[in-house]
Every structure is written in structure tokens, then in C-alpha cells.
Image (tube, rainbow, N blue to C red; front, side, top):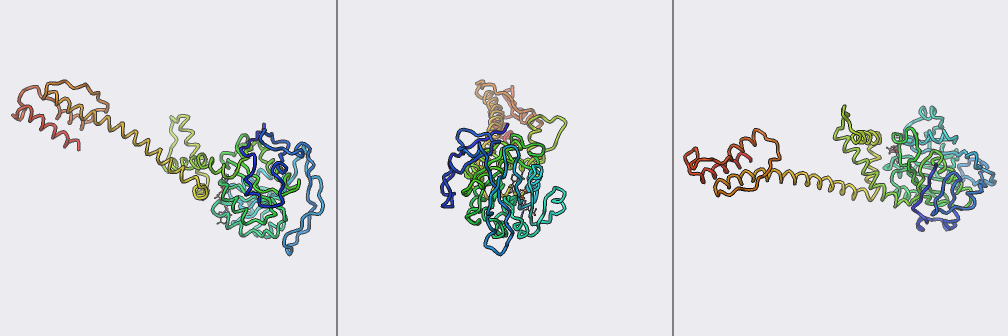
Length: 411
Ligand code: NAP
């Protein structure tokens, strides 16, 4: 069963750049396969899908933008999902992982990356283009940015937007959201649609199934017209069909939540990886969870982790909180240890006091296991029964001598 939740009833108005955009309630549509919750606005269209498609326009790189299609035709129905032409930009670990699902669902997939992945692409049924101009001249309806967070701005600058159709939908899947949203809003021509997403799983955690895994999205800018809204829904439908838990929230909300959950998870995974966890014959369930955490996070590039830190303004605060929590825990442990040692030490001196003053101090339990060193200290501190110490000194000075020796031994 597909579930769909939203924390956002309205998109932030500053994100609606185009003056021509209709109000949110008119624009928001959901494919019928996505179950809606009460706070989501659903247009009549989503119940009665009358969707339209581009007639293919000839490519003409000389025009400022490739022409909009003159005619529109039915694109998809309830029964059969529409096939989209999707370009994946950044065909690394995650780009390939997503491309497999796109191909599996019958979409036409193109790819472009800095490195040459033609052989891998061929195996996956993906058309690979080393030159971004060639990719754009294929007129993908959707361009999915799967680049590292750190390189995204650089890559966006290399995309020849003028070779794309004017209403192309740009999607990003970066693990931070405010940063790519701002980049796309500032670099893309205003006619382009923008959908910011974060599939909150990866090649490890989503290896066998995406059922129940969260997919966060924010329709940052979807232009007017049914075709645009439906294309966006169709793209979201890819993840809904795989069983993802579809969560609509603003990019800012995502970054706040993700810093406290995803960034902390990655940090603990990397700390434990450096710590060098090893499997043992007596692994507990909790320990298995830690081993899995290391396994799931170690496969991700350091660029990804560094991006989570650098490009989420909430990450630093979480790192500091983690640090403080660790220090706090250490302080509590060492504080208890100090208390035990203190009692042990002063317990002995209290014994000496008894021999001097004749007062019996409260009995202090011995918490620490006896070591040869503590046994020596015990011996030194033992109260003497005779009135004269073995060195011939009276008891009082003998006790003082013992105490002095004991503290030196301890040091
Ligand atoms: P990544 O290290 O974050 O990104 C690798 C991709 O970035 C590759 O396609 C690589 O291209 C490209 N790239 C890196 N530096 C570049 C540069 N200087 N110029 C051009 N391209 C560059 O690893 P990833 O796991 O594949 O993640 C890709 C994106 O998906 C990231 O934004 C990440 O936050 C997001 N994401 C990842 C996961 C996950 O579990 N892995 C989950 C959700 C979202 P080449 O391979 O051609 O060098």
C-alpha cells in the first residue's frame, strides 16, 4: 500500500518565481496511485486523468530554445503508466542505481557524466552521451541531476539549456535540499520546471526493495498547464509504484530533519568505521545493527558525506550536539570512577583516623578489584595494633608516615 504524507500545505511564495503560475491549490495534482492525506490539495484532474503529450518538435540548436510542441495528445491513463524520456546527469553510484529503476519501469533513459560510462550504460539499457550538447539535443522531458553535492553548481553551468525544450522538468536528488533549490532557481531559465527530491535510501539500503522507504519531494516550481503537472506526477509515480513512502515537505524542513537524522547516522557510521568494528562469534542484535550501519554508510563517497556537512546549515549544530553528548557521557563515567577511587582512598585514611582517634568510620565498600598496587597501598595503610610502630616511632607519627607513603605510592 502506498502512503503519502505532507507537512506542507502551501509552497513558500518566494519560490514561485514565475508571475504566471496559478495558485498552489490549482496546480497540485497527484497520480491516482498515490494515496492522499487530507492536507493535500487534489485537483479534479487526478481523479479523471486527461493527460496530454508533446508531439515531437524537430531539434534546432540554433533557436534560443527548442520549440514547444504545437499539438498535445493523450499521454497516459490510469492503467498504463506513461513512458518518459529521462536524462540522468551524473551517472555514478546513485545515478546508475536510479537509472535501473527507470529502465525497469519502461522509461527511455539517457545519461551524461564526467567519466565515460558507455559500457556500463549499454549493459543497463541506457544511451550514454559524453557531450552534454548531444544529450540535450535528445530533448529529454526530465533531467535528473545525480551529481555530487560539491560538483552540482559546476555541472549545471555546463548544461546547454538552450538545446532543451523550454518547459523541461529539472529534478535533483541531492541529499541536501535548500542548496540545489537555490542553485536551480538561480541558474535555470524561468520557464523550466523544478522538482527537488531526496530518495532517502541508496544502493545498499534500497538494494532489494524500496517498499516503505521515504521519498521526500518539494514541487518548487511547476509551470501552468496540465501537461507540466502531470509530467511531474508521472515522475513521482515512479517512486510511488516502487512502494516508497511519499513525503511532501519544503526543502528547508527537509534539511532541518535530515541534519538531525541522516547526517547523524552517517557521522556515527563513519566514526564506527574508523573505530574498526569487527564481527565476533557472540554478536548481539544491537551490535549487528552497528555493523549494518557501517556497511550502509561506508559505501557512500566521502564527497557525499562532506556535502551533507557543508551544504546543510543545520549540520554543524548537530555535530556540536553529538560532541557535547559524547563529552557529557565521558564526564559522567569518569565522575563515577573518581567517586569510587575517592571512597577507596579516603576509606583507608578513615581507617587510619580510627586508629588515631579511636572513632570507627563508616565502612566503605571496596568497589575496585584488588590489584598488586592497591594491595601494597592497603598494606601501607593498615592500622597497627601496638602502641609503637615497627620503626619505633609512636603510633601518631607512624600513621602520618604511612599516609605520606601511601599518597606517594598512589601518585
Ligand atoms: P557522489 O560522490 O555524491 O556523486 C558522484 C557523482 O558526481 C558521479 O556521477 C560523478 O561523476 C559526479 N561528480 C563528482 N565530482 C564531479 C566533478 N568535479 N565534475 C563533474 N561530475 C562530478 O556519489 P553518489 O552516491 O553517486 O551520489 C550522487 C548524488 O545522489 C549526490 O548528490 C547524493 O547526495 C545523492 N544521493 C545519494 C544517495 C546514496 O545513497 N548514494 C542517496 C540519495 C541521494 P563521475 O562518476 O562521472 O565522475
